[in-house]
Image (cartoon, rainbow, N blue to C red):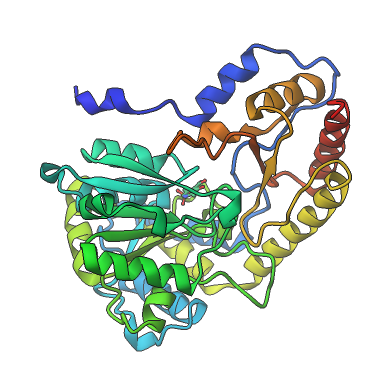
Length: 400
Ligand SMILES: Cc1ncc(COP(=O)(O)O)c(C=O)c1O
């Protein structure tokens, strides 16, 4: 067995199941889950129709590189979404389909990390746990970069010691962030791209929440957009990860893409050819349709906005709560330990939220997830209102 498997941490939902096992909800109310970031809005019908129409594609082995039509569609989407000149994205060398960002974020580290040189992989803290597992199994040491309230939940790149940058081979960033929804802008991207140039590491920008944002006129900036603006028009050291899971409410489709630096993309393509992670042809056809349509994505954003408004209206009477600029999470500060909050909320109100400390590690003597819970507003508007009402009642019982 690979000895590094023993270094993997239990997944947050395993920890959550143990926490919940110890108590039993008593109020007889229906359970509401706000813990899992699985979209629940109805996916557009045209995706299902396209899958059915192209089922004949199951009779063929798909190529790892994907069809030119899919890669062209993705390149066009990237250009229009991030205001990059279309001539600057080569669909042949700079775009690759992946089976959802999860597998791509994981396999990417296996491809780009050289385990012979005491590598470090930097990641935000709290984080999507795949980053950590990917780093460990690639033979690297994870470095947890705290994202704290005092920095608007953004990573502070200036706080990273030079000795860490020198050993860094890969950094994961997540913007909009899970769990806080915080967005990295030009300034932070530019700083990081300059650091990547100086210390020769790769930036993996997880942008899977970039289509779920509050201000319709101000979509989150992407890493390639920032690179383009600062004159890094070949996207050197920059790779972005995008997904249809949240954008189109199809987490089961397993469809996303990576794009950026052609040198890295070519190495990743070679890795993936052996890894055997080609996207089935019906999925490729359905994905083309999904990346070409913006109406369903606009409607999706509107549904989240309405839920944020009503839930925040209810909860702000009993706690300080801020509206995130993007993502579908509320990253709520808890007046008691986050694990106690989650456990007692489950016991009293039959609502599941995720303790923040299950998403983070202690770093520099701080656990940045402590005293926070993550609430995913994925349920229906009615369920979200019911959940917020019950959470309000629960907070009132805390006698603070
Ligand atoms: C931050 C982040 N990245 C990536 C993913 C994976 O999404 P998918 O594999 O469905 O594209 C998730 C899923 O919840 C996530 O929260």
